[in-house]
Length: 488
Image: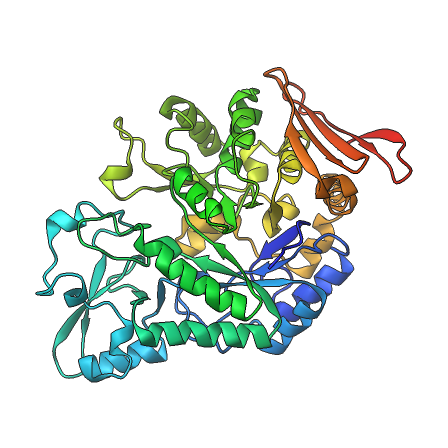
């Protein structure tokens, strides 16, 4: 399906006012006209961990957040995107609980990857594990079954042992029916887009990285695309990987995430050099969702391998650490640099990453909004939020630094800040100017500046960013064709 290329918001169901009903009120009262492109609501389902990403049941909304009626109300005014964790479900889900009670006699047993589906004798082979892109020390967990036996089950993610997130066997007819039922339910509740979370991990094959295993992954993606098309739902596969893998998905017609842009914009502003960013903008696919920040972090490895050398990356990382960031690390030795550089993501608000400099922050957002694709603005970034180290200390998760939950009073205070008002003006301009429906050029420029231009049937707009001063100026035509300019 065709998607509106205007700006989207991404938020947790409880991060803007406390629940879904409050979110809709905030959208109407404070963010009117900002997000005609849609609202991406991070997992609102009952979950046993990872802030919603260990789902128990897609048929219910966590009562702390509201009901499916709240989702439908938001969907009546906005295009709603929700996540489907195609790689895993919660160990506390009804299906896995039945498996724990009955073992192989459970009617859901085939949904899960017991190790005999990977290795015929069910015994892990260390040589195979050494080749995998691991997210935990070993890719499986051992569970006690009701009859007194034990089962080893594949678990890609999870900080606990055994893990809270149980991998699904995507080849199983039971799992395929499970996904089909989710899409049918979403359609009936006005969900227009689905992000396929962790889809890169769904194929497990001995002797491979067990990440984005080709060509097997395409068979699964094509099947899911068929389900989405049947229900008139757009898909966004979420794959944190080397950019070349993203490009393969784009070539096959899928929307992808621009996980390269956040670091390259940050690097350009920090080092006051546009060379790397301009080179990238002249070579990237346009069917991307653009972002600067998200609920996880600013991607580094393996996304940018080959684009940014280690020394340059380390300088940006060190500056972010000095500004309060924390890091997630690559677990697998295979994906570390020869010199040991192992930063997977920088966890920090984008506003803090830029030293809480309003002009630098607005320059970054202006670049994002002028880059082709569908812009997503993370809710903390929308309000130019600052690092929340207290939440990290309280919950023991470094990602909480950029997951602050705003009360209604905090939102009312934040939207009055000049930096936020300037961002609102920029978003509205991006939504309304006709030039953004046309063709894009990254213009030739000196290393200390960036010039991005759009043109459509006589309407045009051009962004000029001075990297020495962070001054950003938009030159554009108005509705009558007259030239005008304004400072971001």
